Image (cartoon, rainbow, N blue to C red; front, side, top):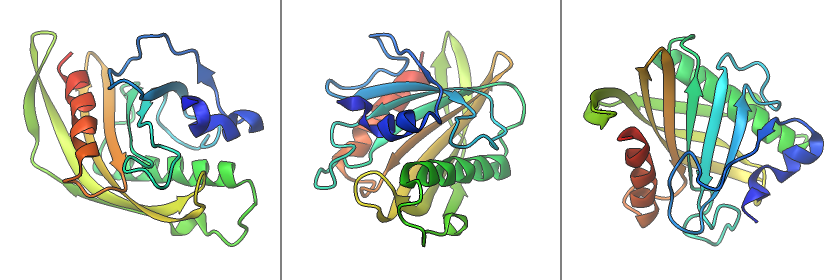
Length: 202
């Protein structure tokens, strides 16, 4: 049941989906689902980022009444180029979410202006260092808000809070995102941060 997030896209044949082993790339609480997809995804072929995306989404991901509705964490494991500057992160996120919404809606809401989706980012102080394979790992942190139309369950405008971490290691770039419409002091964020910190401290 946790594959509902992308089932519509799979029916359209617009996504390349890699088989996910039982032990997901991202550790998460019981009941969380997971996917792995190739980047750029079929629904956003104009993205510059190339690699893989590992996703874990909360049990209430597709339930608007849930306190974990549309709450999930994901990591992009990427090639070394392009560099993950703030401009690149913003541009690639907007391509991803615009393409995702357009593919899922598939013309059902012709008045949606995908170009009107916006992402506002604020760069935080670099955090860490995290211990990763006995090495220190410094990250660049962003907090922001994404205004878009949630296309799966409500098909209504939605404001998502996003927390993004980027870093480089072993000639690869990484981008980790925690995403939820819930206020940042809600319990779901503690779970999202645990998933993120576990990955960062591998």
